Length: 174
Length: 174
Image (tube, rainbow over all chains, first blue to last red; front, side, top):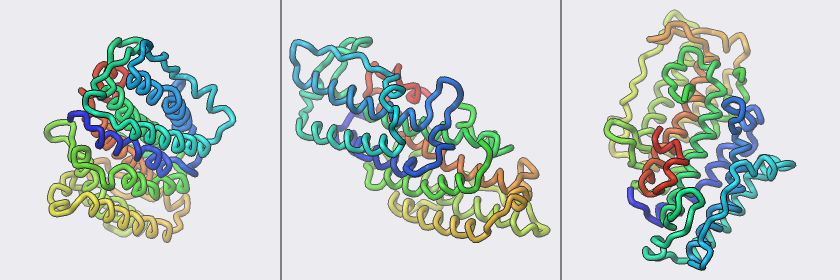
């Protein structure tokens, strides 16, 4: 599927609602569950999404749109949430994410990006030149992949409880 | 995590809301997308969930709860949706699923299941004896696994569009 800005924002604006429908008010038995040592719980993923919203997507897009002399992205800290989420409830993170995402989408809409602007480049610290279009596609896929992760982590909590049905549920051993 | 009926229904009642937040009003570019030949789109998955709601979970649970002479489950048709969804829009399926799930949950709550009843058995056509607890755990994991599938299928539509970020998105090649 080719990148399409309307289809992209259609996903980005849904994500806070999906996460709220999935996680708000849910027992910590689900939201603090992981796939084992050094893997992330739904709570940790929410902190990661909040941090990405603040430090990654729009700041990087802004660097590209500005096309100033400095177009190199600040490296993203994949572990910032272990510090930043301290003292915050899951509900706090859901609310914070929804607020930040609304601001991000307002910024994005305000740019009224053209196809030419979507082809502008920034410099990724590991990959080198990347386009604004690739950044926005990644933002979208990143949302979807973390919803998939959260539901995978949760489903695995019933790996034993499902008994013989485990063989029909490949997600249990993924 | 041990099976817990309250934690189980907490997931089951969320699923229609999650699917609506994720899919309602979304472009067919996302909802008819697949992972390749003979794989399922979000639309196909929704038809499968509707069929399972009608033909699988509560009918099987009812056979177990009744403990009559006939405790063998009817085999589930994994392809029924290709027939049953004909002429239905995605919105129809989302609405039908929400309605059926509400009825399922009302039935389940009405049984006021005890621990002893959760240990009652039915006969799965392939596995033999399975407990009501295992059936309800599977119902829950099945919901979560299909949300994971839908978001995986959608994220893969941007496999090329993300450019070099693909190497940071393992979901793209799963």
